[in-house]
Amino acid sequence: MSDSVSTENSGTPCATLPLEQRVEALLFASERSLSETKMKTILGIEDDGATKQIKEAIDVLNTAYDDGSRAFRIERIAGGYRVMTREELAPLVSRLHAERQQQKLSQAALETLSILAYRQPVMRAEIEVIRGVAAGDVLRGLMERRLVKIVGRAEELGRPMLYGTTKEFLSVFGLANLKDLPEVQGLVREPSWKPAAPEVEKTDEAPDSTEVTEQTAE
Image: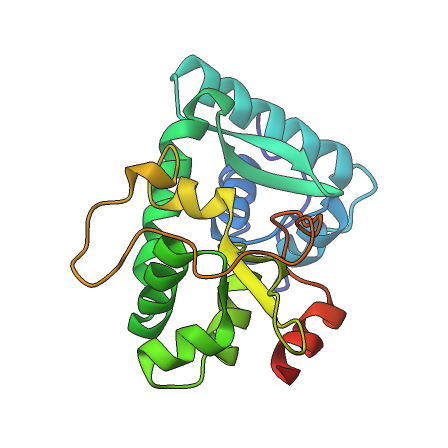
């Protein structure tokens, strides 16, 4: 497809390059979906047919990606366009994201996760005794990452909350279940507390504001 948009003016960067190439550059560089309107603004083109030509450019690019068996294509996402890896490659990409998430965990987060994994359900107070430091901020961060959730309350004064790991934790660390945890000296693989009531129904999603506030107040 030729670049038929009239763009030869000072407000149009890289106007001598094919429209497909410019659209591709924007989509590769963007961390979010780009709408046709946003791309027109960045490209500096305001012709009446610009939206149609951008769509045609995307079709040309996708045809080239398909013909070349590329691992990605341009998809319409959240009201705009974004370069996405193909669905059949999802298991491979998921493993990459899991490794990245694991690498970003701080030493404090890894220590807290270790205690949780082997001793769950566990109170925040016990984690703090074992580590010797406050654990509120670390727990909150792990819950936001969906690695930890509230699983119930302990049978003691105040009925403090009990924490445990999530399915996301198993996925990130490549475990089928908690039985796959390796033996670690000093960490006994048994629960520290018996929940006072049936487990609170929680998803693996990040906690809402009420949970975080209650957690901080322990």
